[in-house]
Length: 374
Figure (cartoon, rainbow, N blue to C red):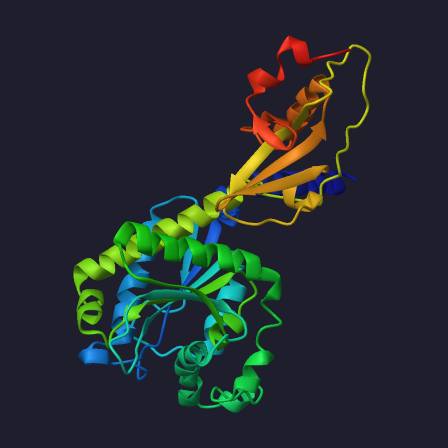
């Protein structure tokens, strides 16, 4: 009996020690936004050599600069597919991202063309809309021919066959909207902040994007074959400019998600509905009140699990911005309660807005006594 008591005391003490000294940083690490940065090419694969520049070197320098900046921001954890001049097979790059449980995959490259074409473009995985997009993807996908066992690794994929691309697109469909959002951030910032020519957001069949199970983009920084752009991208200033622009785009993307998603979601939340009216409610017959809970560039599906369990959702697109609302009622007392619920679900900055005939009006105007009734 005495021995059993000793064992129990020892066990309790042991458990106490484990939980008292558990590595808190590990739990915090899981809360970080994981970004996998992929510098294209490497090792015996130099990428394109426009004007004598090396794509693999420029891509790596830009990626390392982006990674350093994100690592200085405590919200991010950065994982690299390569940090040195080594050859990494395409399927391994995707595997690195998947094993890291990445929230985002960003692959950086430089373009080439037989003409003096110039400008930036960002790709997401999809069917190529024209021969030009296919040729860009074909150039990047041809890297697999340098791999020892590419037939087995890519199940007979032929980088020169347009038909092979069709099978690539299915896996990334779930993340297409988010990938397009990040790609738009990248291109807009290149254009507005750096005054670079934007060739737009495009879709094409990149093998490296197919391998990932998260929002993914492939950035073409510009054309090394263009005399001026190649010189710029090979310069310290050019690489620094591009890195800062990509970094800010990734931060903007994360913050657009933060406006909608909570940092953690341990279990599927219960759906919250409030519809009851009480005696003494203030009802405004010609006014519709809503609680604005978020706004951002991302087009998020109106499902309760995307909004911490809130139901009665709606959204309006204004320019490039989506505004998300909770509730819809002429009862001002009820909308105040709905706002309290939204705050309780983590939407601390939510606020009440008013509409008349589907047009937004100032809340003070909506609450004028002449428009109310009991």
